[in-house]
Structures are given as C-alpha cells and as structure tokens.
Length: 264
Image (cartoon, rainbow, N blue to C red):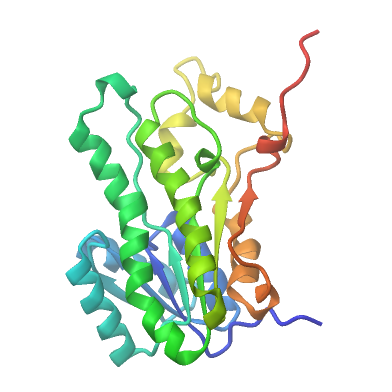
C-alpha cells in the first residue's frame, strides 16, 4: 500500500489563515505534518492560529509579505531554525481583481502578477536549496481553471495562473533530478470568502446570476468546498506521488471537461 502519511514533515502553506490554504494545512496536520503558515498582517495570523487551535492543531504562524524576497528569505531561515527544514511548500497566497481589461490600470495588473506569480517564484526559490540538501521536497502551486481558460474581467488573474502552470512545469523539469516534485492543484469555483460576493442571494431570494451560471456549467452541479482540495493536496505532498511531477490536478467538479448541455 502506498504511503500517504506526512508524519515528521514540515509544511509551509502561504496565506493559510483561512479558506483553501487553511483546509490544506488542516489536512496536512491530520496526516501528521507540522504546520507553518504566513499571512500579510498580524491580525490574520492571530485569527489563523486561533482557528488551528480549535482544530487541535499547534500551528506556527508568521507575518510575511511573500512578494518581498528579503522578507521571504528571512522567514525561511527563521522557520528552519525554529521548526525545521521545509519538506512541503504550498504556494497558496493569491489575489484576484475583477476588472474589465481596458479599465484595469497597469499597476493593478502588476499587483496581481506580483502576488499570484512572482511570489510563488520567490518562495520556491527560497526553499529549494534546503530541499536539494535534504534529498527530497514537495512543492504544490495553487493554480486555477484560469490556468487553461480566459473570461471577462480576470485578465491579470488568468495571465498569472497560466504563468504559474508553466512555472510548475519548469521547477519539475529543473529540479526533478534532486527528488523534488512540483505539481499544481487547479481548483474550480470554490466557496470561500473570496468568492462570497458571487454567491449572495438577490433581494428577491433568487440565486446570484453568476452562481446560477457556475452551477449550470459544472457537472457536479455545485460549488466546490475547501475540503474538496484536502485529499488531492495530501496525495501530492506524500510519497504516494513520488513519480508525479509537473502536473496540474484540476479539482473542478468536471467543469473543464464539459461543453454544456445542448439547448432543447
């Protein structure tokens, strides 16, 4: 039987105070890993620590801006000193700005690219040397269906997530010989605080038009939950995936495989 245990592993999950990152870190802890997470504000870190404590998890939380290379290098050094060498990295921190492309400023575009693409490069670069020395490592990049698709108002996000897919493949290609596996998870539409405005009921109690659109376009006929990502993340973080490299696993309820129902 393949081994899905993460016993004895140190996992860093960026932006994991809540939502997808929190769910993935919780799954790792239940599989035996020691959890390290960061967020950009102390308030978010404190809320995250309290939430992990409620789950019976003794997590280690740090304030760090993952777009700042100097701060990231300091964080990794501190984690290695206080907790241990990072065995598993999940590049989860991300933002989205829903603005039509021609109304978006170049600065707004750069901000999304900085958090969603540059930061995974910076954090991965910081942890890889110690992974090479240790002889193994797992990097999981949280990609998106927008790594494959485009749609209105998300030009920066789609560009960043498409780039993240290719960064995933390149890390796998460049560092696979050192027993480092880099894969991605591409969530579908997941019910998180970030997507809450898209799921709010209308004044008359009806579904938000986008909510109805997504449910109709998804063969599973529902939004995903952060918990839907737990199993795939544990698989990609464990020895069970040691020969899986450079792959993006789409956890999307089938939406990428579905062209839609034929009109009657």
